[in-house]
Image (cartoon, rainbow, N blue to C red; front, side):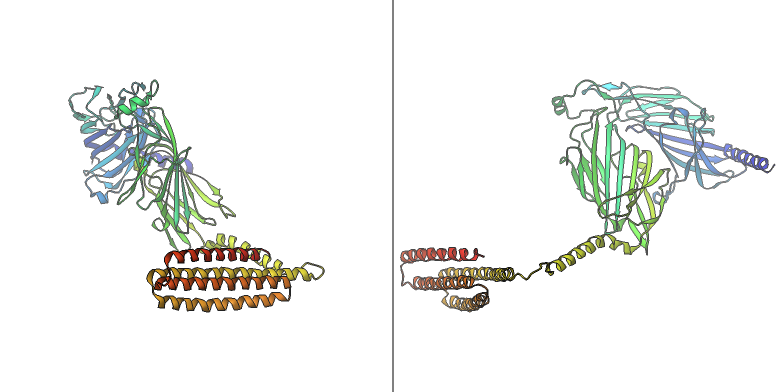
Length: 599
């Protein structure tokens, strides 16, 4: 009995609500039908009056059955408000009626009381509603399409007066409906009406067969990855499968004709994608690799990428490419304590008048993020089960929020929000995965090299290691010695040019002091190695004798240079003596190298 009473109450409420809706009337309708692109767009200005006795909270917009499956977007605002204050009204799709069509219920901002009026602006976009006629054309032919709709504004309410203005891409039409009168064609526009006193659900077919060579681009599948990093970056990558949904190319493609005829009618050679103004590190590639024909233009409020496929797109032709970029996370990621909010676009502007038939968006959050809440844009999307994504240094995997939607348009470029919790201490998780093992490895190596695993004491091995260490010091000393001689050569060349004897003597005195210190170090090495190897000590002694010879030869070269500068030595004689001296220096260098290579 209680269930029966509840059913009766629901039926009564529905009946009363239906009566309130039936009291509305469209006093004036101005319908603009834009057929310029491959997406027919309707902008309908409706002045609604409540002629009943009770208030109304909703207005029902009805799509007739023939267009029920091709409606991609329905939006509504209150006309007359400032552009900044025009927030979209909530629109909810109701149950479909096979005879009357699909109803979209628009919630009014305030109750429309008896006798009051309100003007709504309803925007409707249709996808895949144009019929290509003919379906195949040659490379040189123009593209013709056929579109059928209702001459009248299809509504569940009676309409007092209405007018429909159709805008075409060009002024060339094959045919168009010329009834009911009045019908006026003026170049690219055709005006139907005004008509008066139109009953509810009135139908009259409007047929338009016209030329449309604008790009018929359609994205069959778009996969978008948004990877969030708490280290300051958000990476975005889109994998796009695109095709030309216009009339198919009949016959073979001629590159010569394409180059000669630059207009190419319906062929798509390039299109522009708009990215956020902060986008950087942009890349555009396909199966072959990077596509270098693209261009990036940085603008004040966006980054514009000109996408140029490797070949022009004709009807039925497809292309596949990947577009990616990075944005700074501080522009889209906000936090209070350990609670974070990600707010950014669900999709980007891929091209003008875009139609994305299937979109899958995967938002990859940082590892260990939890308490994840997704807030969709103001339209219906499907949230699929969450996934896990593994990349470098991940242990439990990164949570992935997966969103799917069909038939997305420019109007769907709106923000979503994801709220989640992330403990800031977990930022150290991945660095510690590197630091701790490396630190442990270094400690193990330090320990192993200091352990002696031999059973007996090996005196000869230790002696060899000591000699090797001393020889490494000897090599370092030789590098320092060579550097000092190079400085002395530079000073000598500078003296021959500038003839500044004072500066040369000061630098020479400084270098002599360093030579003396170096010889003391070499003598000390000879003393250390004598206890382990008399042969090694003799080699160092030989090294010292050769160094002393080179020092004397270098001093004599300096003396010859002074005589040359003072004019006491002929230049040709000096050059001959210099040649002989440098030959001796090279011989000494060869003998020193052979000594150093013996251990």
